Image 1 (tube, rainbow, N blue to C red):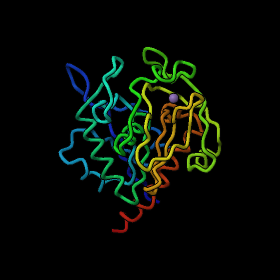
Image 2 (cartoon, rainbow, N blue to C red):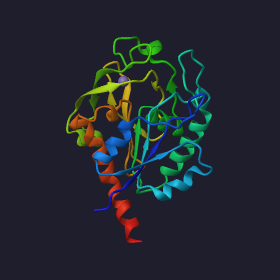
Image 3 (cartoon, rainbow, N blue to C red):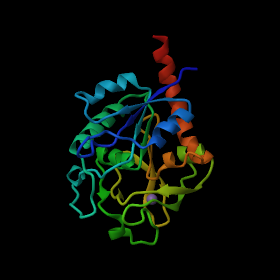
Image 4 (cartoon, helix red, strand yellow):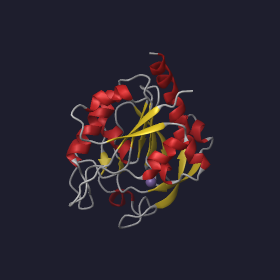
Length: 242
Ligand code: MN
């Protein structure tokens, strides 16, 4: 069996003395544990779309907020780490990836938000302003927390997790407001926030608002990465035949 190559978008350039493109190790370790070969995709490529020919699957990782201008949103004092470079790179990459019929796409946290914006949806700029604090999605100022997610029983995610109730690691302060065109909500927090989406116009495109990559010891969360790598096998195999 060929090991699929999984491209993972890196965080935006950051740092004063020595600017870096970084990525939390969990994304890489989870793809390796699932049998894939990870490659990190920095948002500085001249032609983002070209790299799609070299990968068999794509992960849009977490990170800073999408510029509110991209979805007709307003500035908010809590918006952080906005990068025009990363936004534009991921928008272009994702738009092209959605046209590739055999390239599975997993969108995590910010990635789900990017997916929603690319499909014309909008985001809540700061969740506590609209949903209150009954369900914590992030502990101030910027710490992780846990909450429950309920999955649609007919969703692909329910099939992957083999469960309709999950406890997830949550680390976000924004979320889906208006759903993008063609996106289907398939998971919700107890406050009603959309926590998972599927894009059925594509053969395998899933988004989760939580962080499976930060729970490498969790067998259930790991199934998401196994499912991605498995979905990338077909493309990897065909490439190998050439
Ligand atoms: Mn959450």
